[in-house]
Length: 330
Image (cartoon, rainbow, N blue to C red; front, side):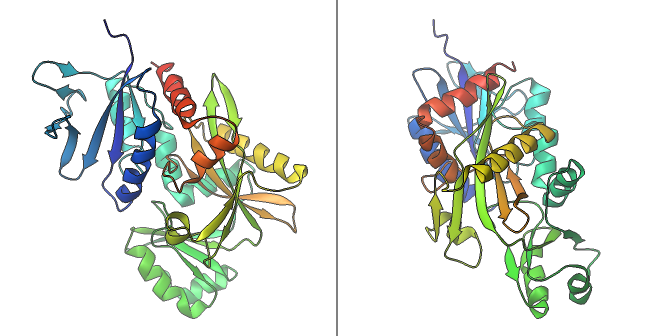
């Protein structure tokens, strides 16, 4: 009798970030340990939730109980490995669904996922907890703010970005107040809410953090040096950045980055693997948190796989640790 845990690996999604989900899926597929787990890949798309058989036949998932109704049996799952960037995998929707069904999963819970998907609310909670963040404004499509008013309240340059979402889609760096209107229009094409945030000068670091056997583990962190104006979609996914892993920094800086990362993980009650972006302000000698990614990319170009290897782990060991941690919640 087969006693291996049955795992649903979810990819796809409803947003433009589905493209990144499928890139992550290629890496996860190659490295998840199928000797330990029975894994079924499920593609969540706007036209339905689908499992593709070895013969290439797509079978619709029964959303009433999250099972696969095969002809000979009904596949039930012990846990879900969430690899969906953007909605509904990163914003708490799937997490709430799985909570109602009693199925554990590898990401942060519904509340944390929903909160951290909203960039403005994330920095507000972080600031309340004493974590340093940039000054910012939260704008809504139905309550527009004049560019002149923004420029009067924030110091240039600023970043203008969709408040929900990731992969730097719709994001702009603005140094001239005259360019604010175009940047706002670009961001509002992606979201009903927009965050305008002061630029913090310094070195950019990003660090993966996860929990194993109850202990918070920080991965060797990365310094990002972009060839673009900032770390945008092209820099992230089309090779227009240099990523140094592990970052070459003095130990006092490393201690501050790791300490801040653990603090963020604790404050937001995170689970699974997250990636936190920081700017290290050298004038203040302090890290400023930029954002939290609760479903960080796993593609060949992504940072977390680099950090896992730098720690001396294989990706197979890493994904096994994430799944096993989720299974302990069952």
